[in-house]
Image 1 (cartoon, one colour):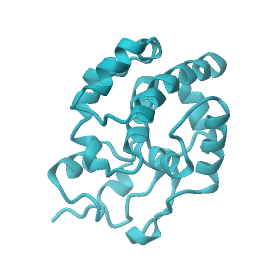
Image 2 (cartoon, one colour):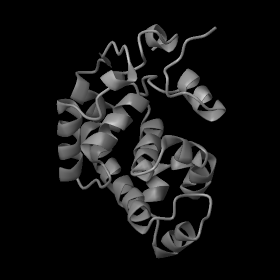
Image 3 (cartoon, rainbow, N blue to C red):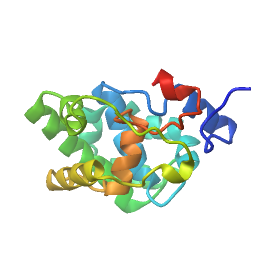
Image 4 (cartoon, rainbow, N blue to C red):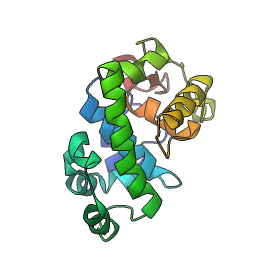
Length: 185
């Protein structure tokens, strides 16, 4: 029997756990997708967002940051009426404004990848988690990331959201040591 992290209970969550969670992401499109989805998740479960991910891809131009950065009021109206995504006005406006801030970081650092991986000195932090209760909700690194992203104009990037983002894109490996994915990522 394959050992997994305790949280991967449903079929969707198990697939996400087994193929994506904690795998280092070094392409800006993938990083932008996770920025948008983690912001949308605030106050909700990840499974809620995961079930809507394909709808988010359609609604947000397949996470093409340049396109999203140019969304206007007509696009906002379309999104607020899209039942396939979380229709929270603040989260939708945040996704659009975060696209603009994302591009500014790309221009300033050469890529968002270079910027975001700089918070961990370009190396995944391995936490050697034994039990779920050992996983923090935020760290000094996620605090610093949150503060800097906010300074650069991002919204829905509190420290807890940043830590979840770090886990999702492999900046940190929080797979339990008993999980088969721990050594793989």
